[in-house]
Length: 420
Image 1: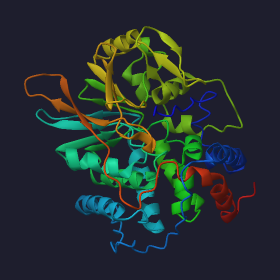
Image 2: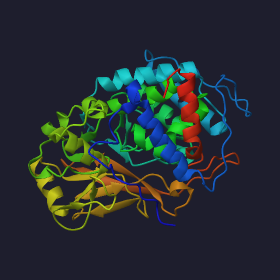
Image 3: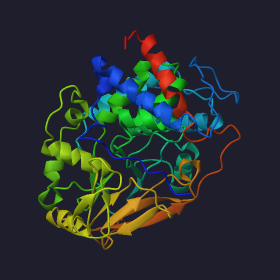
């Protein structure tokens, strides 16, 4: 089956403005949740049972690891590894609410100190693994570490957005990623994707998943959104390779890395939707970094995704790379049959890391390992394809939580004492 295509933002940054964080705008978000419930209410997947968080061990008997805080990196690394084993043990495994809150709060503090555009330095002879969309597919996600090694100071990772939605283990993946980030802040990197955003979460399952797994606690969903708003938008590896989730902004002909770095990612994520305004340059840059796709041709054109999304041609890529003295770019955002695809005269590489996407496609996944060669100044990409992992008997299929979003959202509002 062909991969499902999601629509682009219908208006400028409609999908990025943090209406959840404005209590008075919660009704608007609830209407989005209602729409999501109608769209997927006839899903072919059975509804999943809501599981309350009380800190009990799952049926496997493996107890939840205790979050140790940020002070001891060794304890944090053990916690991250134990969290992988804990979540693998049972689809009912839940990190207790208190530990989850502390982990998310610490992640916000850490990411708030990072730049919008992060420079990654890979010493000569070392490498960094670039991972594309994983979309809540826990067992495929864990297989990436099994095949490429666990994160360490010598085995760097950059996850290039779309950690959540569609797959039904987005909470687990997000918490594992944040645990590794806190343990290895200078060697483990996360970049925001278009699905690390509130409205997308209402439409593609993450909202329903969070509320189902955390006893309709709205504060946990809000905490995840705060993390998302703080995530960097792009990375540059060794001043040589540009990495972002979607693609190049439509103004890339004269766009410098400094201009991208100057984007206030918090501001473009929290504008009050009740007070619309004309889009500014940083709005356009943000929108396109998250949403744009390449096409084989020159210039710009309206994306098939619709809305304000655009596609960029080979000349746009060439001009941007030349101006900023870069060799090539890596982006994600699109399913590829083999998990990757070169375009634009091998200047634009797409990597997608969710094989068997949505439990309905036949695609492979891939990881790109960038090597800092001893005898060259440029990075060498090594593409490492992989197939979908074996799933356990209690596996929860993709989009299983989406159909309950509207019901759970209303319950969460009532529990939080919010009058719609």
